[in-house]
Image (cartoon, rainbow, N blue to C red):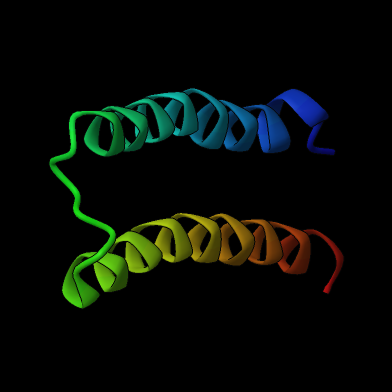
Amino acid sequence: MSTFTDIWLPYIYLYGVGGVFFFSGMYLITKTKALNTEKKQHRFWLKALYGGFFFFMILHGFMIISALYF
């Protein structure tokens, strides 16, 4: 039988620690004005980056749950 540390701890580490680095980078990008939110293309990529992070986090969690229970 798989335990919490075998299944969910890597997931939490991946999106927890990885999320800290991702969101720190995004914070630096917006604070240094490297990203101009007045431009349509910049807003698109900002949404794409945030959306991609959460999409893969949800997809990965769904795949773990489906592997465990279905």
